[in-house]
Amino acid sequence: MSLPATNLFPTTVIGAGAWGTALAIAIARNGHEVLLWGRDSEHLAAMQKTHSNERYLPGLPFPDTLTIAPDFEQALKNSKHILISVPSIAFSEMLQKIKPLLADKVPVSWATKGLTPETGHFLYDTATTILGVSHPLAVISGPSFAAEVAKDLPTAITVAAKDETFSHALASAMHSPTFRAYTTHDVLGVQIGGTVKNVMAIAAGIADGLGFGANARAALITRGMAEILRLAANLGAETETMFGLSGIGDLILTCTDDQSRNRQLGLAIGRGLTVDQAVAEVGKTVEGMHAAREVLLRAQQAGIEMPIVEQVCKILFEGYDPRESVQILLNREQKAEASHPAPTKNN
Image 1 (cartoon, one colour):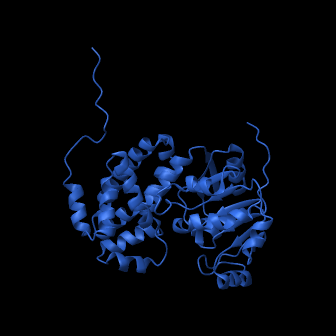
Image 2: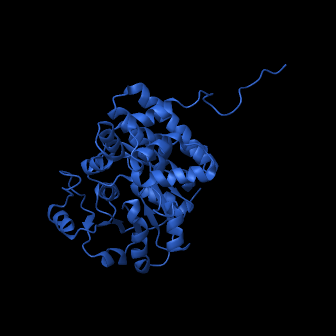
Image 3: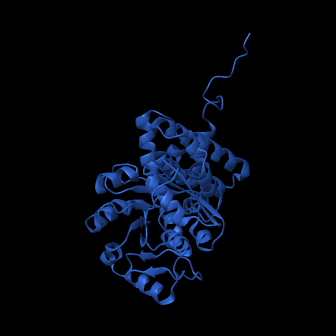
């Protein structure tokens, strides 16, 4: 289907951490004009001087079309597209901040994964509530570590939007031989996958930190996927999405690679650190911690079982010993792997 052209440039990226910078680099690498803004003025000045982000992505120079924007209002004034990359706990506040500065119908996307604190709303719902319906919205998700994207290593992500014109334009802006961008209309499914996988990665890290081995990790990832599928089905997401990049793809990546902050947190807890000590050791935002309680609450409201998420919450917030939580999971009653009945032979 032929779609009308959508001009997204200049694009302003809000959030100069590793992931926001990596996405800015990926778009600018395609020759597009990109402005990058962050809340730390000293960090912005350093990036302006070195034309790189030495704090988060050292040794990786910016493309010529990537410019540092020291002034927030100026960064938004002439922008044709806003891409937000801030922690979920700051997402709502950032939307409130940009709202009065947005020109009419300027599209907004984000690469933040998680839920809105206190309300437990998915970020798309929060963005719609704050910005209204006049701005096209999109979610960027999938199995991607910032450093690998910035280094131009092969990566595939998903762009989810209800506005097909916007999703295709945004995917085209990022797409390259090493950065494949797929599109979907299943905004809910992409958000579920991107949120719950972080909680599962904490669990996988704990298991590995305890030295339980590859068998346990594979079992945990598989049963974690079963929990994600139950939640997705209950909330109305598409099963196909959960077996795609933003579902099983992101789950595998985050649970198995030590670049994941969520896995790092779990590893530290499994090694015997307290939760506070583990958080301090990671030293960066761990989205799974912010999402765990909200995900469990949604599961309880829906009347579905998410035992792995439940035990992660008990470890993080109720002081449970990780070995005790593992034992609780192992002692669950024996049952069939699938919930549907076995097929019967036709006579």
